[in-house]
Length: 104
Image (cartoon, one colour):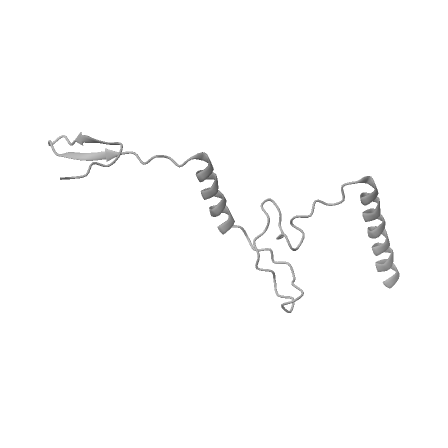
């Protein structure tokens, strides 16, 4: 006895032969999002930052989505949040430029 696939029905060709037809259920939204995230993770570019521990070779980790670096090389950084933090950052940049100009 032939087993009937779940959710299947019989259709007939014009010549009279019959065949089973069924539709695969679509994955749930959650499963679909999980499949997409796996696909996009697999095809994300590599970080490429210069590493400290491997003789300066480029980092092989995947980048954070929407960024150009991995989580270890600044991809997770949000930058300074407070006005005080932004000011500290600005002062550090000014100091660095002064050092560079003095060395020239």
